[in-house]
Image: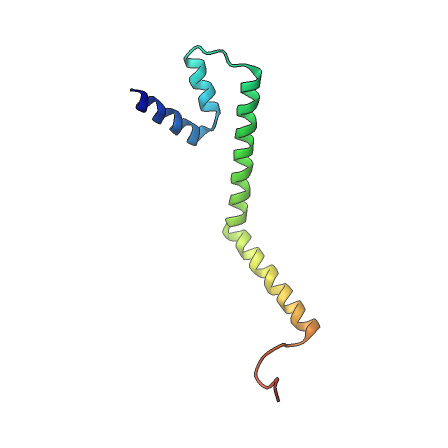
Length: 91
């Protein structure tokens, strides 16, 4: 029974964050204080922010934009410094 309850709490935390713990506490008729509520909101907000950052960093559009940016930088360096290697340079 305890393992089943722990599994449900863990699943709720994974899917909904700490707000699931607050709902569980409310169902158990536990008093939820302001400190607990603020903590849950803060942790959930950080979790969402972190995930948005990960999504934007790994999205295909972001990878394509970074690749194009690096290509532009490399072309700029090649134009300003000249070609550093290639056929016929050692001649």
